[in-house]
Length: 409
Image (cartoon, rainbow, N blue to C red; front, side, top):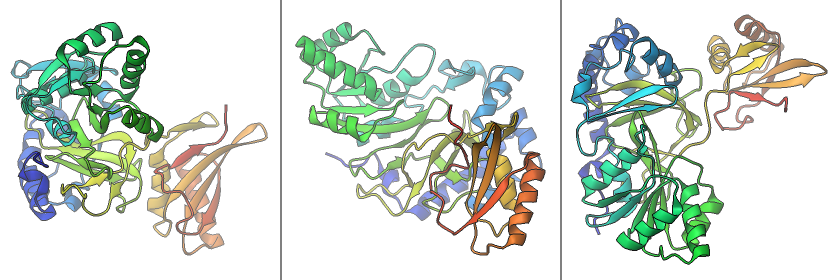
């Protein structure tokens, strides 16, 4: 069995970076032909953006902004110049956010995830992701057909009919949420249906905790996780090495401090920001609102691209204190004004019948003057009073959280 989808997966990091950043200026020029990108990237010379450091200077586009953008400039928020009729399919996700599918077969570049999970030409895939209005079903359908596999477009639910399809077509692999896979296994066992042909699975769209991973494996199915979005397609996927998730080819992934566009050191938890070089619908520093961390070193499977730990929570930790919104961007601003501070965490609690907040800040140079100055900046930025607690470097958790709300219900 061939171990890798193609030679791109095993090229050197230098080769990959050179290829991606060699293409980026032309992608930026194409993106800036769209009115929304032209406004966001005004004054940027695409020819100068040829490194990660240069890319990090561009503004992020938050996924949370997309519904308002799309509503103001239907259907794609002024971010796309490709004529609507040139796309293959047109979808919508909650928001609403409108998503086009280009006409290529594997248009979400998801075949790598299925290949890494062991699917090969001639396999049959039971695809239980939804085919209705949202792109989930088509993301894996197109990937399987690009690999030369047959697809059962089952969609979610209706387990009795699913059993009929499984017993008739004997699919070797499953695509869908891990929750629905467990439902199929449980109901199949209790009703005496033969679903033993299923040996592999690619799961996404829901948590897949170690306990459920162990249960699925004990029941004879080798399951792999995939991480993608309706906007970008496949972002990262699990490989036989089981060492995090390998970033897909053709993407530039950054991990940034929540509320900013500033990359964090390798290993620190932060928000995922993606630049996609898709010529039909380029994304320039799309901040997903999801947390993860980059893993050091190369994967034992031989794939050389960046690896991330997978989904580690949400980056949008905005909360209300005394009726006013406090955002991660404001906490980050305190850090910018006091570069001697390291990792920051704003802890929101109750003091009697009132909201209270304490900014915990790592520093190697704790002084009362710094404490007072940081407290004054916190008040200036948030318009709220709060305490500052200076703590030793490395004492705050590396979990990507900038704001924690401990007020309970």
